[in-house]
Image 1 (cartoon, helix red, strand yellow):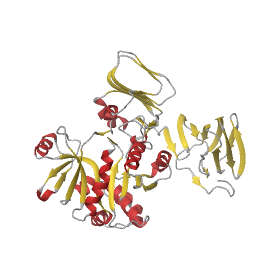
Image 2 (tube, rainbow, N blue to C red):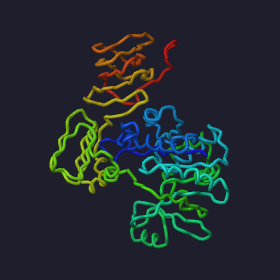
Image 3 (cartoon, rainbow, N blue to C red):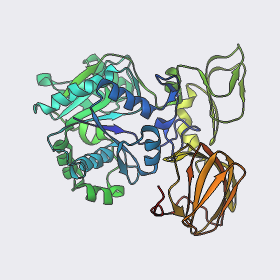
Image 4 (cartoon, helix red, strand yellow):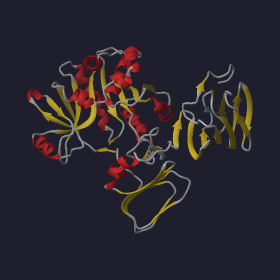
Amino acid sequence: MQVILLSGGSGKRLWPLSNDIRSKQFIKIFKNPNGGYESMLQRAFRQIKKVDANISIVVATAKSQVSMVRNHLGAVDISAEPCRRDTFPAVALTCAYLRDVKKINPDEPIVVCPVDSYVEDKYFLLLRKMAEMVAAGNINLALMGIKPTYPSSKYGYIIPAENNLWVFKEKPTEQIAAEYIAKGALWNGGIFAFKLGYILDKTKSIVGKNSYAEIFAQYETLPKISFDYAISEKEKNIAVAIYDGEWKDSGTWNTLSEVMEIPCIGDVLTDNTCTNLNVINETDIPLICMGLKDMIVAAGADGILVTDKIQSAQIKSYVEQIHQPSRYAEKSWGVFKIIDIEQESLTIKADIPAGQHMRYHSHNFRAETWNIISGEGTAIVDGKKLSVRAGDVVNLPVNCRHTIIAKTNLKIIEVQLGKDITIDDKIIYDFPEGVN
């Protein structure tokens, strides 16, 4: 059995803590067993490994989020989308990757899981059962079903059919949803299983190709369609594994607040007149809330949100009106925050944990200056090593090759100067010989 963990998506519904680079699954908001905080991605990965430590997992994510995935999970197998296209292309690309790159047998059961469901461990215990369903060869697709508590237009429905099989219908109106529920329908729980060869055959019929190289090269031309619309709705040979436990979709501020174990995270003060209030403050500035009821307050590098909980579901259209670069990102080497933007300069604060380092790179259109504000490390500039510590300044002219290695936890203020400062202005090189 092979698990595909879907960790893509954009960052509009949980703004300002999520953005185009750091989408919702990377926000550390859940308490972990060690008393710290973990992200949706870390929680889902931990729960899967808890129920079966030997399960093989590949994370399907956007190319821009690969570094962040590694920052959260370490050395995990990744299938990276060149651009965002929705869940069917992401699953198709990952399945082709498993066959062509990882050499997985086409008869291998594949189980696809989202990362944004807040569930108990037994949700993931069903993975093995669903894999066994498709491995038996009697069905093409296994879905997870959840007993609905009300008619909702937010979820897909799995409806009983003849011969102990089921059919799938994606996101109906509330009226039709009520009719489905009267027939014994279940909510779609977000997990589906199939044999690897099944989805590769479907990919061939839908897009005309199923090799990893072809799909990757032409990814932006693939239909932008969900797995449910492309596959589940059309499949008649479906079996269902039923999950009976806590299940919440934590993809909006209102639903996320329902699963926050601590109502306020960060430097937050509230008075005793606040009720049903959830606050997350990722800034270094104190945040005081007084007299707030049924609200969410979130403050981060990209902005500040103050909203009624129910109204928070409408945030996406407003975030789309904001045009600014993402001011917060996690990289494989650490974290950076943009703290100032001018016409021909950009100032960021970088935090690099001990033992980590930036990639060895250069820029064609900008110069940089590193101001070391704490910690110790080694800067490498055009192959030369420089020991640096708090108070040191390193000047990096246009086109020079550079990186920095953190000996201890290192904090840097980096000032970028140039007329064309973009994330694309970067050339990556191998480390100089003798440096690792």
